[in-house]
Length: 251
Image (cartoon, rainbow, N blue to C red; front, side, top):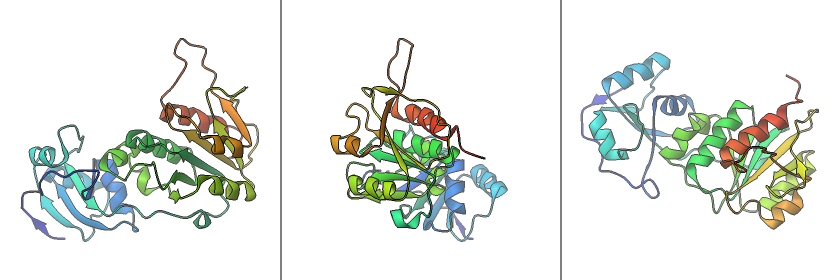
């Protein structure tokens, strides 16, 4: 492991530039992911010690830096905790790579990286086998998404599909029940009492599920909220949906 002291690269554009992951938990998960290509680790001495306490650093080149330099590189709003890791985007999976899925989360054109990252974290917490996104109208992997996912980006397989309808048909052919969420659905979500394999489908905030997606769902449900606020952020709704979907699963 080399340890050099050089200033970090100029501030990058997260939408077009290299992928930087930041934050202790996020970077640690990426370092532990053997499938990740790690290019460079920028860390303060304290952050590097914290990472080493949690596991091996490996052969990645380490550059000493300061919090101020990381602020300049990542932007002042990035909660980097003194560490940033330049990586290649995580490898995406195909549907055929997941054997006998019991629980998957399907995102119908969700574009906000905070929401996608938060849903990844929730999916990981509930033991989901994969998260499926569309090739178009879904966010590029960024530090914002990875930070919101808190390491789940390197723990839950992400599947990118060109045609979401075809993907749902394949899931149904493999014995999965497709459960769609829509605020206008007639049926209220209730905790499941069985262990039927489930695909939970969430739509973008505002737009919801597309018509073709709705048509392919086996069931459409809504969240019943008796309080004065009648809507939730999609990542919060996904957490409730996954709790209900897994309530009857055998541990």
